[in-house]
Amino acid sequence: MPSSTPTPETSGHATAPAVAPAVAPAVAPSVNALSERLVARLVDNAARLGVAITHTDAGTVIADAGVDARGSIEAGVLIARICMGGLGRVALRASFEPAPLWPTMIEVSTSSPVLACLGSQYAGWSLAATKEQTGGKKFFSLGSGPARALAVKEPLFDELGYRDQHERGVLVLEVDRLPPQIVIDKVLHDCGLAPEQLTLIVTPTHSVAGTVQVVARVVEVALHKVHVLGVPLDEIVEGTGSAPLPPPAPDGIQAMGRTNDAILYGGRVHLTVRHDEVARSLVERLPAATSRDYGRPFAEIFTSFNFDFYQIDPALFAPAEVWVSSLESGATYHGGRLDGGLLHSQWGGESVAP
Image 1 (cartoon, helix red, strand yellow):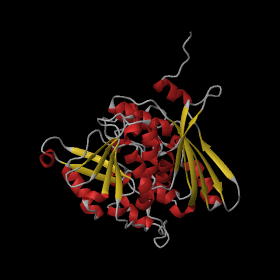
Image 2 (cartoon, helix red, strand yellow; image 1 turned 60 degrees about the horizontal axis):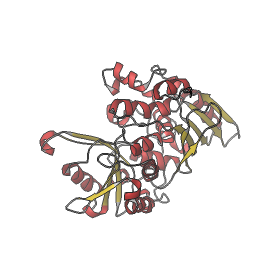
Image 3 (cartoon, one colour; image 1 turned 120 degrees about the vertical axis):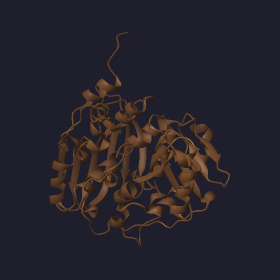
Image 4 (cartoon, rainbow, N blue to C red; image 1 turned 30 degrees about the vertical axis):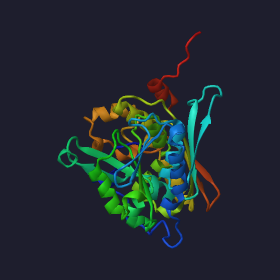
């Protein structure tokens, strides 16, 4: 999903039937090992990136990229790469041609789409604590990133046939406050890590870095819907995508709305699949416009359902426009459409006379 909201796997919605493992355990790389150099870059350049680094008494690294620290776009790009387990490219592109969709676009690509997006980047690990457990305020966050593959707490990993066993791990939390010790202890226990072997990165959706890393899920959102549609994941062999980077919003609901809208109405994805039949099917079934709830800003949709995420049609969570190429036939098919008008109406961007 594009932002910090419960997902079909955790909400009781029907999911895709089990398929043959999409990741071969004997040859699959370690997403935590591949992410280590990126984590080191984030920590070593924290001051320049606007990230605050602290340590728990036991030695766990906490990287604040938007709670008390200001964060930055560059930090968000680096965190997005960490989320993808070091298996994806994430970059910014300026777009100032006449009538651009938006001036700044995020571009994502991966040659290991299933492992990078679903085995690592997907925000599927629910982490919660009651106010009694925290000694104050209850805590909830969805965890994304490589450490999910150490804990393998989600049924999705049975379908992927993948488990990482690296000695260090990193987890990204989309939440507006630093995690309490009881949540840190749970992550350490489930991942089988010593405290000093874990790095936790915190990126609120309303922060600059949080906005970047959520919008950078444009390909992951497509892969997740492919999974929900029941398409065998081993059909997907390449994935690229782009989406506009909106300005952050100080209000949490509006921030979630903007990041979702960026993908639902401005996201483009190009997938390469093995078979022609799958390609034809996906261009018809994958775009966000196939949903009954399509057509309104996400914040408005969310509010209309009394802030109950589970009432929203799961088919809505998809890119606006998809291109799917078939290795079997060499043909490329196209479906869906962008809605720049909706984005500009929500984010501004109209000309102002001098």
